[in-house]
Image 1 (spheres, rainbow, N blue to C red):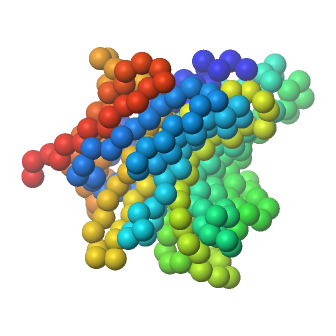
Image 2 (image 1 turned 180 degrees about the vertical axis):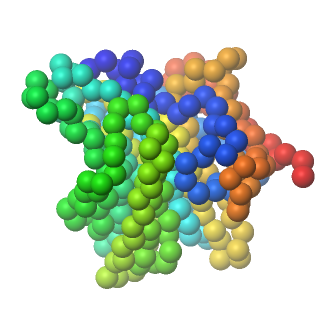
Image 3 (image 1 turned 30 degrees about the horizontal axis):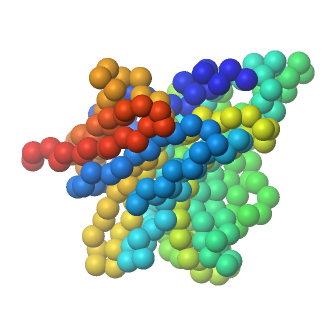
Length: 274
């Protein structure tokens, strides 16, 4: 597998232009947030999250604040091109929420699966799916996908038993929304953002994601994850966060500065003047 190609394909864009965010509206965190990168087979811990790397999956998981409830998790992937000769057979790019059953089981996951058909005359298969309470996948055959597509994903918590799932394709402008409910309440202890491969091959980390929480007092806070290799000048890339309720007015500019590998970057966010 050409890991350099896959890493590039899965890395977030260097600049998210005003109004280009594919799903919803991200609020504005007021404080600096630590963002981490790393290499395979290492594990890093942060006060606001955990970045995990193993031989066949990479990603991030954020445990919720005891005084806050998770409102949503969202992010985007650019789908890689898989050659028939690649060792990759099957992979997932997913977001999810955990805290079902014993409070540690998977509550819901949504993402894109990619199957390498090798030398078969059929093209490689890219398909959207979601699964609830760890049950079998619900495939969305009507949602068109292909290599190079930028896909936005979002899971929104409506209540302790109800969530909505949203897919968006920036190329086709297609949007798919569904919802599902649980037969029992959930703890919703954490949110995650993962690239999963089912072969013993290193996996690059996902690009970026956001988890939004709301406390019992009505205050909100955003956590931004960036784990992609930075390609911008001066080792910085820019993220614009949009004002709630709009798709165009940036209220926070965030810069991620990276040093050396394994990288520990600081995401510096500054609120724009009204």
